[in-house]
Length: 134
Image 1 (spheres, rainbow, N blue to C red):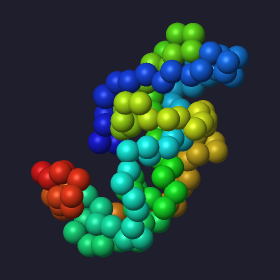
Image 2 (image 1 turned 180 degrees about the horizontal axis):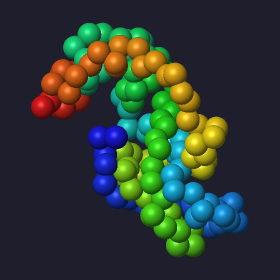
Image 3 (image 1 turned 135 degrees about the horizontal axis):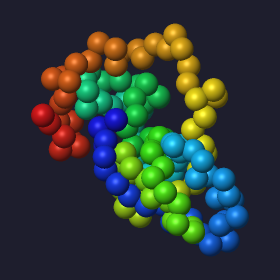
């Protein structure tokens, strides 16, 4: 959501070109990837939207015990083995693990609670070593 409009590309190995068949019919994709630039992990961390330490599994920080990331991106086009995407919050060169179509019937939930995040405001952003501060 904080990467709105940011554009990028996914390059799929040519061996998997056939697996992209019909992906162009989806407006959004779910990308699973490896956080390859992390420098270790902790069990608690202070998220950038909050000033309080939170458990790693209650936040979306990249320094995770198992460094797997997930992002929902907008698919803008398919050119052979290249996916043109937008709303990208992934670093260049990040190893992709899997691509899944975003299907509202499967992926949208009603009655969702967002824990501590529900009380976070946009002005509660802290610099916790990530260099992010507004």
